Image (cartoon, rainbow, N blue to C red; front, top):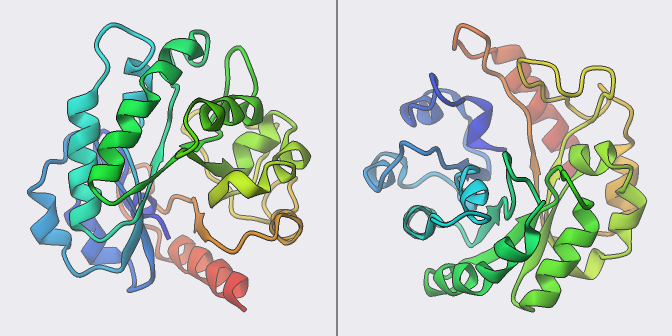
Length: 245
């Protein structure tokens, strides 16, 4: 379960919300841009197995000031909390993957930092502005063979690449599972759909992928006013229990 199901930037990123609302299940900690190492003591002891670096890091990697310091901080937080795998958006808006060669040039240094903290670095199949997610993550793994992949089912569905993702199963270390609805894609507020609420066959995809690593169900239980929807939280937990059967 992602800690981001009860936090949301910019207004509801307080890490104390995690202990107040999330049950004691294996967690992916979603690191927010205003967090520092002070969160480690407050979240210590939670069953955190994976982590997600600040998404905005990817936007800096195509420019002149790559956020290595922020990434190193995220590595320290993730490692101190017990994570062993870190998810990275290697590219992000506004440039997206238009200048992917620039982003890829920084990948070895990012992998070095992750490795120093005992973390396996995975590049996520996030939306593209020029290329496609599967081809981009393959390029990342070719750039440095230490790199591995996090598949995001929603974004693969957006690009029509679920089947293509099956062909790179040997590179996959982690999966973000959520459904996709093309009729509301791009509308605000950002929506996260549980499997069965969109057009994708998530269970069928995972069965065909034959993935034996970690899976995070990405969803949000944060209402517009910042309160947590307990029913939505239980629905997410129920899906995870079904997956584990």
